[in-house]
Amino acid sequence: MPAGDRIADVDAVPDDSTLLVTVADRESDEEREVVLVRTGDGVAAWFNYCQHWRDVNLDTGDGAAIRDDELVCKRHGATFESDSGECTFGPCEGAVLDELPVEIADGTVFLDDDGYGFVRVGASESGEDDDIHRSTESRIGF
Ligand code: FES
Image 1 (tube, rainbow, N blue to C red):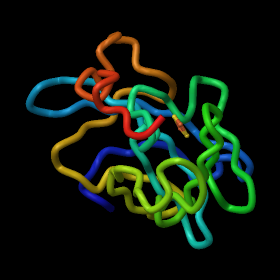
Image 2 (cartoon, rainbow, N blue to C red):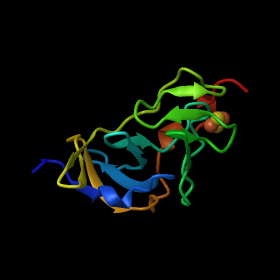
Image 3 (cartoon, protein in one colour):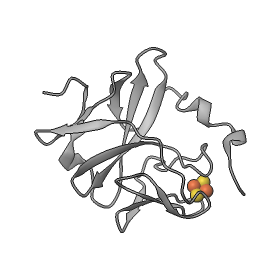
């Protein structure tokens, strides 16, 4: 059994969208939103912000679009490979989404990072999610 917290059943992660979950930094208690996506052989977890404008969420609560195994940012249409997180098209082409390590065991997704604990399935309720990323100063390009 993995040491990290249980997040969700693999079956809860849709094939054509994302499952939004909230985790918390164990030291600061800061909540962070993460999107779980299906990959060819499992599930990957990416922090819930675009690499173009980091104050833009990929999943705003209703699931991000997945097209041809790529996660799509609704704002300007950047696409990110579900398994590697690399942007293959759009204004941040070549950038890579920030990953939260997870592992799969017995059809279940577990955290694989001692620094975070699972909080809930769904959006952060603290209103503090990703404050460090929300500044428009973190925007690149147009
Ligand atoms: S904010 Fe995501 S593509 Fe521009």
